Length: 362
Ligand code: AMP
Image (cartoon, rainbow, N blue to C red; front, side, top):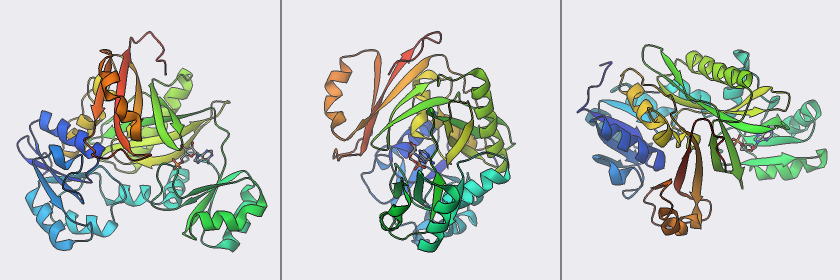
């Protein structure tokens, strides 16, 4: 079935806050949702019609889930390929396995980008200490060693500032297959969220600026304060990537902008993204609703923004300020229903709108 009509059930792999906001958007369009995750009280499970609590390797649970839903989408990209192979025999999976396999592995991802002519930092595959030595010789320092798989929020990364840190760097990535990347002296970090429907139509959200604290996204400013030509170029790169992945769904493209206005792609995330939360209040269609429309085989809606915006994450004990935030009527507070405020844990976010002719202020 290509189009999944409202009233049917959308399966979502992953049970975090992204899944929660996807499930809420799906409900607005009249869908039921079924979360597949590992925690019965997870943010997404709390707001979904159905949930399955099982590992991604549990073939029987996967088959049952696939039979119970009408389409599968995801809020988390580190889903084993084998899981998708089980599901796709029974039910459409959007975005599909090719998109996931490309974005799960930094070496495959960057090789794919370069094959399209999309610029990235220079990089080299590192399987062992000898490779690392050669990679440092070729790329130079400073450089960043990153595990090929399962890295997020700066985890599994080590910045190498000189050639004597080889052993320390290799230990930091626990000897896992990695890539060495040249360090990009960027001016700012931006991201572009692009949606592609089953017919291949594309819609993109305006490029936004992302500022990090302790390797975790702190604030997003929409739009990014960049020249029009840079914004257009970044948007075109994102659309080209979505097209060449045959994407059906949403993908966030994280990029570096240098002070010469060059744009280098750093990372792809084939799902709604933290840097797109502002779209809930500021755009005709939020990234969450857009991702549900794409997964359900519906036409995309307008991503146009009617306001500028700043989104701030509430990390760990930032959430203790929830009452203070509620005393600011101009702020939209989103909480994810997580019981425990651990350090570095994304507990919620706050969005503030600005008129289109005003620069969003942090
Ligand atoms: P990543 O996990 O690849 O998104 O990296 C996390 C953060 O580390 C990025 O958002 C950047 O701030 C920084 N970073 C990663 N790779 C590089 C690089 N090649 N050059 C400079 N900064 C980087």
